[in-house]
Amino acid sequence: MFVVVLLVVGYFTGVLTPLLDKVWAMVNTSSPMTTPAPLWQQQLGGTPRSATIAGGAVVIEHRTIVESRSLTSGAQLWEHKADWAAVAGEGAGSVVVTGKLLVKGYEVVDPTSGSVRRKDTEARAVWTYRNGMLDVRCHGPEDCILSAWDPLGSSPRWTVQIPGIGFVLFADNPDILGTQPITTKRIDANAGGPEQMPPMLGLPIDDQVFIVDTAAGQVVRELTPERDERVVVVGGRVLRIKAVAADGTCYFSVVATDAATGGEVWRNAGINLRTAKDGGCAQRDDPAGGRNVIVGVAADARELVIDAYDGRALFTGAPGERLLGVDDRYAIARTADGGAVRSVELGGRQRFQRAAAPKSHVALTPPALVVVDEKPDKIIAVNPGTGAELVNVRSDADVLAVGPAGMIIVKGRDMAYLPFGGAAAPNPAPTGGNPGNPGDDWPECGGPKQEVCKGR
Image 1 (cartoon, rainbow, N blue to C red):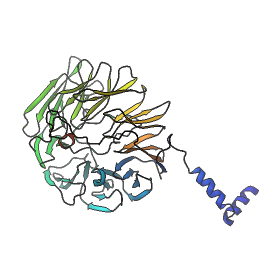
Image 2 (cartoon, helix red, strand yellow):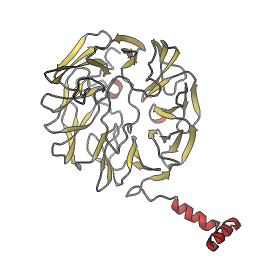
Image 3 (cartoon, one colour):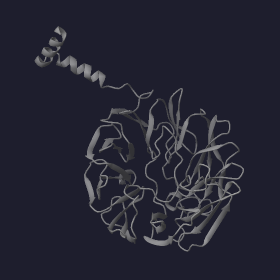
């Protein structure tokens, strides 16, 4: 009782205030998250749900607020009340789109200053991409308008009428009919930031699929999937995936059609795109893949990467290998013995192979291939084309975002930034691409077959 009285009197008289402030500062200071230490480390007000690097800022999404911090110092730039946030654009042209759940509309915010560039009060759903954004607003249950915007634009590129949007299309980036990324623990599924807007979009509305040409801004087809098929839109093609139960198993087939004409382009019987699981043939999942390629399993259990545009097999794994990541440029696979990962250029040669612990977590992002090891705990980033190390630190943190020049890691409420060193990181949209069409660039035209450029 005597000690308690002394502490209370000392606090209110100010005698113990400096000492108590020092003790509180020690309690509230975290030890470095990495060895060697990161460029900066900051303690947030809560555990973040997501983070995205937008130019010179990192945009952090919490449960009820969105904040932005400087990429060079970690200092807070601004904070807004919002239930969700997504980044559109890239580099200096990035913007943050924020909104509230079950409330129509959104705000387009500058990632550095926090100023509102544009405000909408009617949109129900928003999709954000590296080269644009889409929103949809409705005047009635079957009277909606889909609009495309430049991230910094003040008027839409185009608008098109669609018959409703369905119950599931709301807030930011609701699911549409395409591919799903290959994910892993310890690395956020959206660490690489926004993707390019696909050339064709598949919107599920009232048991139908509406195919929207995102360059021309028009609905080019309306499809009603059959009972035993799943329809997805990948690489400008409409894939009709059938799974038929017979002889105690599922028989799969894929038919790819031209989105505009409906004419068949290619077909593949026997390939399993893993759209059905749990022993049944009901297809409830989209195939794995990235941008314009899909991942499948051949009859001999080897994993494949297929060009959705023309059906070519761009990568065939060795027996026992497992794909860990894929995009329009590379396939990342773990070797059959589990002791290494290798990078293979799609349609070309192996780029590199490096040792990796059998239980390490691996993810491919546009800027870097990320490897998170356990026991000992390490975070490693390498150039996906050369294998040159960009980051190699000891840490048990998780990777939340990867940008062109570094990555954001998080552990609880602590966040840190690891800049890429050594070899320069690759451009998220590398150019120079198609041997058969040297005048075209992959990022502008969408993959090795330049499908977005055709007819444009």
